[in-house]
Image (tube, one colour):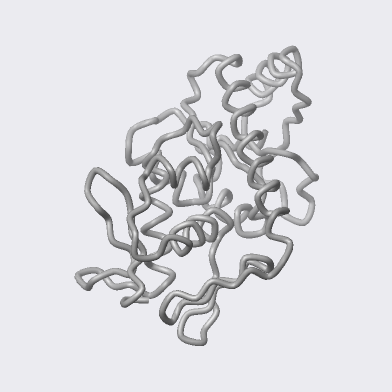
Length: 224
């Protein structure tokens, strides 16, 4: 846990330990090179806002991050997800609920590692000018490298496997975030928009990823 006051951090730490979690309260900010190896990070959003979360998610893309914040409105949730957090949780939640959210995030991370292990060979998928290498997790478009975060890559790979067909929202969330996902479904839309932007799509122009209202998303081969 990063960025909590000593008193609150101590209370949460004791509660999580009683529920079977090993928890350490870290001062803010912890220099990234000195960040210890942890399975999950809980960040208090009021300390240093979300720039710190974004920096960590870039430095350690496989580390699941939960943002703990006073506000849980749509704008606050979207800001947390866009910064690279896996989940946004209100600070007024009970330690039992926080522990359950932590367990869910750890299951999602474990399932993601398992899926990554299944892509040990360099499976290559080509859709128009877009080429995805599943093994090394590289994306090339028009000869240039596209830098995607882990969940962004998984999402694009899932769409590419069914290029030209609509993939239902439920299936995307299940296959990218795992059966255990309990967070907001808006995280799917946030990640789709991030992928569009990184692929070079421009507002007002037809996108390579089409939203089918009330159903899901489709990767358009002729626009890739």
